[in-house]
Length: 115
Image (cartoon, helix red, strand yellow):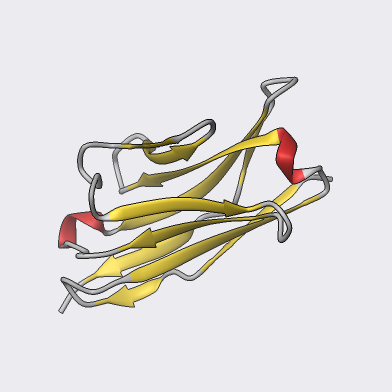
């Protein structure tokens, strides 16, 4: 059974930094293209960052967030800097099997940016 488990969410002050982690089990990690999405109440889940051949970012986080992966640890990271109130959301880890295109999701982790 494939599982994606996020960690690292919480409360952070505006202008602060936070790093999210997503550890994958049940599948060979290198077979997955990894991404981070976020969702706020009443809105659709939106892509924040994706890492395949090279990293891609949404315009709203470009220059502030960095996605990376450690294949040895089967983990992907999202480093978030200069956080703003509008970054407040539930952040979801996503993995897409490069061969089957099957999607896998984590349970989500809340990030709240507030003074």
